[in-house]
Image (cartoon, rainbow, N blue to C red; front, side, top):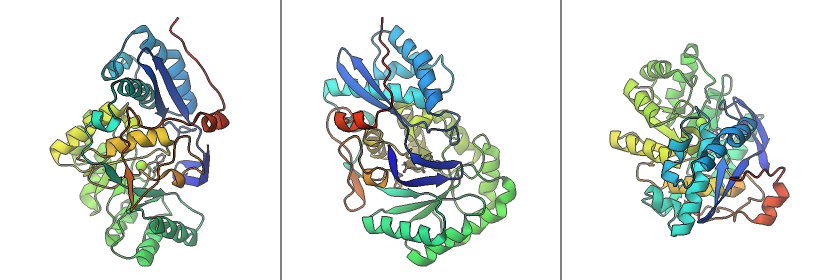
Length: 357
Ligand code: OSB
Ligand code: MG
């Protein structure tokens, strides 16, 4: 699916969203899941082709062999396969959608949503110039976004933050995301963020560097939020206990599914650690589930749950449209939205069917 504008981060540029959707057909009915893996292994080791392969060769066969499996048991059935959380999450999401559609319960109800709408932020990629950045941020603010996240990398950090602060003022809710592009030697540049009242610095260091994040946290004033480092509730617990982060970005794909995402939320909520819902340039399907998740009580910060038109000219579901900076949590059975088959067919590049004998 073509993106409305290229999305550049410290790990690469996306111009199209190449995405695997999973449709399960069960005796209870059908369900849809979305795999958030990107086209290249830049954000995570998982990527589209690895997810496709592990689904085909390992995950779907195990799920089919296990017979009638409820969503609550999918993770357990797939646990013999190490890693591949995004592929696993897509499968669990599809089974959960089928199950909930048959009982009439929504994703929000099933996960424990506490509100009917969610506050929206927007993640702004690295543009060609400061002028272009200001123009993009200006456009997003005019649309009503309540929080701006700037992608940063070494050489594109203090200047853009300074320019955005200067142009839009002290009241703007502003945060930055480094996608693991710094080292502890860059402490000086990261410390300079302290002067700009940035809400948080997301994932400055490598995914496996919890002690580095804890050390950095003691040196700088800006709160650290972790994204890539948090692969499960257990890892969130370790990061928090070490002092590696004060805030957690929750992405269901990164932690192996919406049920584990809710468990990360529950842990953080019990420890008083604020969380917010991350995004992976999802279609309307993943967006629907993210909105349900973001409605849980511990999601106290606006997430990267932007409107459909921030990503796509034409989404595969009815578009999610923002009103007053909010998106409504779908209330219908399961995800509450379905792909428009004509639209889906137009963007489909391959279909693969796997049957139980
Ligand atoms: O680090 O949060 C990230 C998109 C793809 C991969 C990683 C990230 C992102 C975003 C965009 O920041 C969030 C969104 O709007 O979906
Ligand atoms: Mg991030």
